[in-house]
Image 1: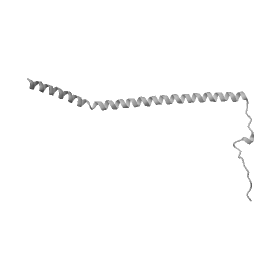
Image 2: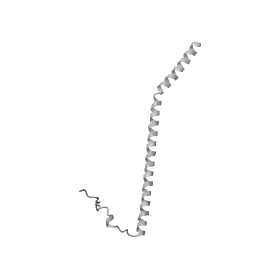
Image 3: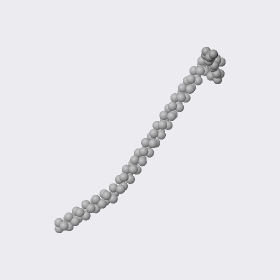
Image 4: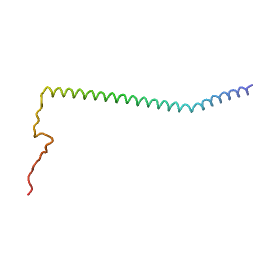
Length: 98
């Protein structure tokens, strides 16, 4: 009777070990799928935050330009001196060599 008990215990433990070893190939696959899913969520989050930051910058720039245009409209037209014109070249003359 002991022999039958040992046989059944060995058979059951072998069955458990075999089922564990066969399913161990699934563990790395699940791990890789989880890694890819996490990477995709991270990419999506970064893209959303980047878009949010671009929106904030655009809104800030628009407010700045609006405020600048209002201020220049209130102060009236600005006269430019012709000597300050960036298109006209400035000639600087130094001492002449003999």
